Length: 403
Ligand SMILES: C[S@@+](CC[C@H](N)C(=O)[O-])C[C@H]1O[C@@H](n2cnc3c(N)ncnc32)[C@H](O)[C@@H]1O
Image (cartoon, protein in one colour):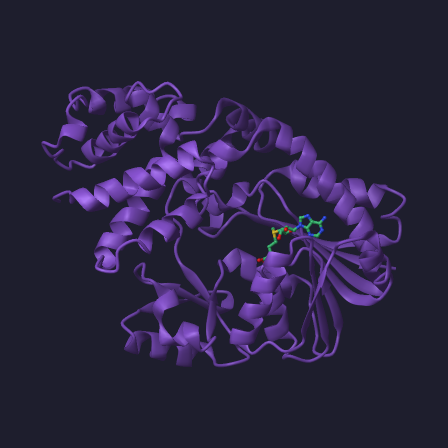
């Protein structure tokens, strides 16, 4: 493989923003990809995948390259050298690579690979937390699985089309897909492709949504005509699925504390032809009080560490801080207490996260059920999805019924 100067520079610029300016990897990569219209699909995937790889292996590569914290451009080129050398790619004779020795890289890689925190490229505190929460066997398998590239999975929008038709139309647009056993609305891409540039996407025939995430709305068992409240709706991944399951009938209320997310949800709902969604911004406690005891089904897709989706957002490993764990677990308990009040008698509550840590999941549900606010609820079922066991994103969901 020959390295092209403008593509390597695009990777370095993107890493600079992610490591030094707190930018989110997915957003920064999308921004970079808009920089040059002449880049073809191979160029684009080189930029995206190389950047993700270097973000994913930041600790391991930094240790190999002797980089101590400061990610100057010179050091970013050193990281790049490690990435390329480990893949057998020849380093070009550019001045940016002048003082980056390639000699010891393989030997250091073999040496460091014996130690988990380097091999899996994870901060000490997070490695300790994961081991304490899951036990070393499960954590070790999970860490390795979370460092793989995730497949791209679509959810067919059954308001507009069906899976066989979508598969055929995508094939005509040059994109091959596969069915996934046990996931009736899912199609997995055979090879990575920019699905957002397809006519099928423009027509609202699908959303990009991992298989585990596709389980969550179904867990709520929503029926056409029900009143359903999605309390942490964000840009609407689950809300749009709920709309498809309820066949556009009944009322879906989508809540969030960020207006821009709800604006994006509305835009997506329009494209999807989802008409039974009403968005409401939570800008005071009154918004929730008004909904007390009013819904047949309530979803709390809670904010979390996102440790189950590290394959897709590897930069979260470096952005998460120990203090956030306490903050987020307190918030999750508050949300369970406050939003469970929206469920009416005989109704259903689903609590879900894209984390694999018991403190964010089963421990939260246990604490809620043991509290005064949880006294009217009982656990109907719960499920934890591990990446190492399923190949799908790490998720947790619990279904509670109100007496
Ligand atoms: C895991 S994300 C939700 C993802 C979304 N349900 C989806 O499927 O695309 C959690 C969401 O909770 C929102 N959030 C944070 N604090 C909240 C609160 N106090 N009340 C409601 N939503 C909140 C965040 O803005 C974020 O959009």
